[in-house]
Amino acid sequence: MSIDAIDRQIISATQAGLPLTPAPYAEVASWLNLDEATVIARLAAMKERGIVRRIALAPNHYALGLVANGMSVWDVEDGEAERLGALVGALDFVSHCYLRPRALPDWPYNLFAMVHGHSRDEVEAKRREIARLLGPACRAQDILYSTRILKKTGLRLKNAEG
Amino acid sequence: MRRAPLPADALDETDRRILAALQEGFPITPRPFADAGATLGMGETDLLERVARLREIGAITRFGPFFDVAAMGGDFCLCAMAVPAGRFEAVLSLVNAHTEVAHNYERAHRLNMWFVLAAENPVDIERTAAAIEAETGLSVLRFPKLREFYIGFRVPL
View 1 (spheres, rainbow over the protein chains, first blue to last red):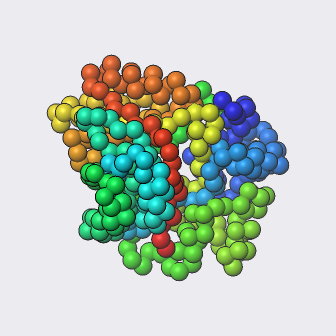
View 2: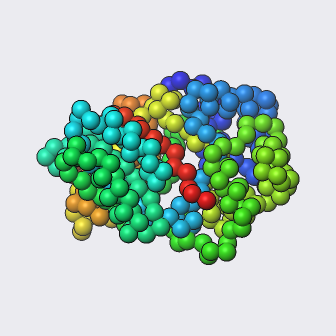
């Protein structure tokens, strides 16, 4: 693991969010018996290393009207997968786009793209847009709509102090 | 988490500007609300109150750092299971009991349970998937990412 005990404490203290106060990093520092400059320097260094992707707010898709989302999956030719994945990932309605191994015979799809919209019709229209983009290199496709969120916690550090 | 849309008039233009700006990033400085507020043309207190209200009405799900477990030397793996309808709730309890299960969704498909395993150590991913198979008697299909093309959806505002 490439983080030390202090990084780990900071991650553990902030993984549920930052306090809404004028000096949130000083507040986090006070919880951990550190000083504010250390917390700021550590977070900045972790951001530099990609451990912190960003510090930001996460809009609630559903509350903002994006109530339809589907995991679209595609079976694209291996030789074309890199090129096509980059094209699909660049679409503004796709939130995540990954190349993953197939699990034959159950699962022939290797390209996964999460599609969001205000309605199922909108998601289906966007899915047709992806299909057009992929063209004949795509041999099969499907979309899996979520019917229920069963768990959503994000990362939880184990054995973290505090 | 709130899954229903907010009323159309719940957010004003300023709220939308705040959401658009702060979903991109938030400063790592001693007075980040003052600094972000200056960029948005509003005072520190005003921005703080607005963000607090956005959280209260459920317009945001989280405010803070987003971590990448892979950059810490850990790993993620998307997994899927075909769970018989009559056993769904029982299997769900067994699966969700593992701390490594970060997200879990029911999806309309023969493979009806999709979850992400996140662990600080790649060995824990395999150990957890194997434990779930042993506990449930069902196979866990593993879809580790081979390539990530994009992550970081921005809600249009």
